[in-house]
Image (tube, rainbow, N blue to C red; front, side, top):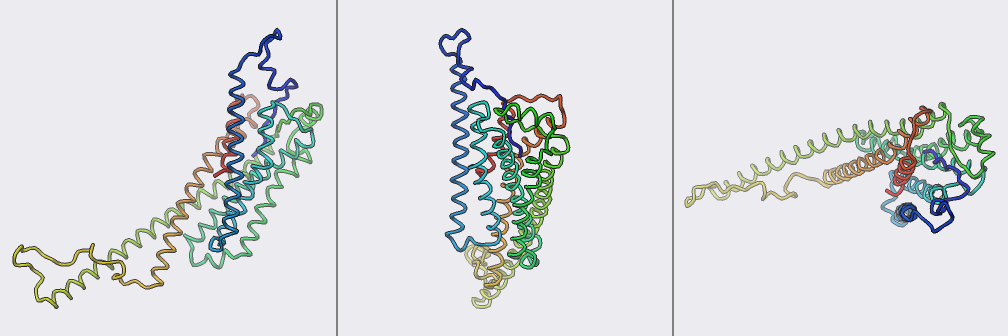
Length: 350
């Protein structure tokens, strides 16, 4: 993601509340709106910090949760935690004060951290979708392909690759134009992140469009495979129960001589409801496989919810980011800009 542009205003937000003739303060509705914005943003920050800390602590304390997939989950929680701790508060400060308070250098630091941690968070979700793809679609190859060494390599790549579009181009000044750099140096109370067309294409591809495409295709494959396995499982269980039903009926007839009741004339053979799960030809190995498959399918559904939430949170931002950066004459209301930023940040709380 990219940091919001902070329009400079030396008089600050309180200027809107002073009457032109120096009289009594006006526009108390603006005060309430500002207080509401601050409250909502503070709640998002606190929720993101507490929620991600809970995930990290839970995995660290419970040995059963220390599985390969949760390595990605913990790393994702750490990235989202850093978004909440070092990125959101600066944006909140800009929204409240309506100007940048921390100087030219810290503006570059903030923009770099915003791009870096938000991209890292998105790439972690992509890694989780790939991990689930191997676990469900290619379960026999999963232990071979998804080793701890491979996971470590993926995590290192996830943490290093965002630097390509954050610290390096921002501090080298490659992301913007010379005119904008001069303007920022002359106006340190503004932290506008004006990007050139090459940067917006490369950064949006790495941060969102490529990971999002990978996630969509992997989840579609997971969804199809999960449905196929579930239908296959129901078919096998149904056939086994039917065979067991016929076998028990024959045994009952042989032991009693007749299965028909003389009084009612109706058949009193065993029904399928009377066949217990343990009577189906099951073995501990089959039971474990069924439990494992159900667990993988539950994880797949959870992944689908996560992916859907991710797209809902970040798609508006990247549509705005690309359209306004490539179209110099496309206006966008400030309220819309604030909303798309904080909807994207909200993804770090989930």
